[in-house]
Length: 570
Image (cartoon, rainbow, N blue to C red):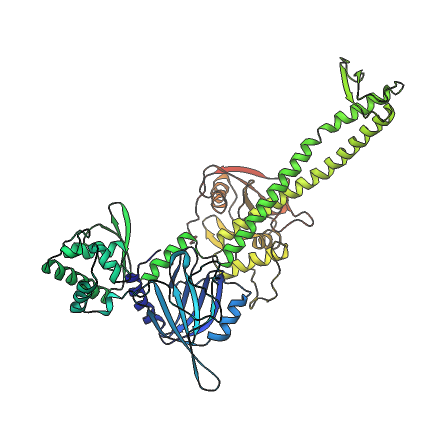
């Protein structure tokens, strides 16, 4: 969500109210371009996020469940300098897209060290820079002279504001001063004059000022009458007055285009109103997935592992297809041995009748000229044996690859169900044990429970649903009783469902629970989903198979429409 400077002035006021005098209790680097500050302010826990990636912003967010366990070197450095400090002020620089957060830390000798955190929201040039006594302490993104000849950003360099930050802020001037600025510096068109003098004007607010002053913006500034000039100054002052009390964000549809503004517009259709600007930014970033939280990184790793395994799977299949030549090599070897009396040295091929078929058609057999007919036959037997062994090994590898693909896809599905920190940690722990990701050196601060599965009471009985492979494993092989009914979608990633009931199981009950099983699967949004069901006593787990993997010989299948259980709340 790209906000202009004037809208950022409202956000700055909002952040100042929420963060001022707040203590930075913890700091995390969520991804390469994003920092999270856990601040205790006004007896509330506030999550303050700064991101300078694809969607640069700073805002107060909802709690993030999945935070990195291992701090980056930058995170450790910043914790040393600003953790347990207090935020004393959040200010905008010259009405531009630069926010400065003042952070004070009480040192052991009683002195106070002030760190200035400059958040520059400049599109692809966005950055977050930490400065002490005008010297850059650290930055999220280092900029070398090769990257930008005008401005380098690196520790121990003097911090300088970006170019074009010398324009003034509309909020700093009264009506008379605004008029004097227009008279002194006005040139070009009216729109160009406003943008040249004042920082922070986006299209929606420029249009608003022009509508108030009854101008088009294309007029030559030098041709304005005294009345038009005064009207323009009054319009700018009216906007300034409205911005001082603004605290919301409005989304308008103006001629089919979405425009965001901190004040009500004179034209367009109001689409949505946000109570705070942080709320709007948080929603935009969540929708676009701009911040790579630990669960998104895990999803990325698993997706890459699936792609790698799919390539290997296709390679094995191709090698098995090549093994079709095996029978041909055996036939060549047999025919050459039958005709072993022939002299074929220095010949590149041999035409012989196929004595092993009824039609006895002629076959041309390629030969190695330097070998005798017997030696050529032995060569074909070796090729046959090699392909035969490869086929046995290849079929085993193909089966193992299929199981691995199903397992990786099941983890990917589990991530879509994980909504709590505990669920995500269970999946991460499973991935560590399976060797998909490296084991963390830092142990969990709490014990992973076994009761995080979904438990629902339905008219048909008690329903137990696994959110991930660990829970599926526990429910199916340890929790369930032999006469409980087990449900799972056929050849589709999904949860294990256990039905425990005192009712006599009929087609109506089985059909209803099968619908729930289809809902808790990857095929939730499709129709006619095949669901397998059988008694727990028929379920077996092969030795050394991955978590959640089962086999069964006695089962039935029912095709149903997915249906959400009436007592389930996501």
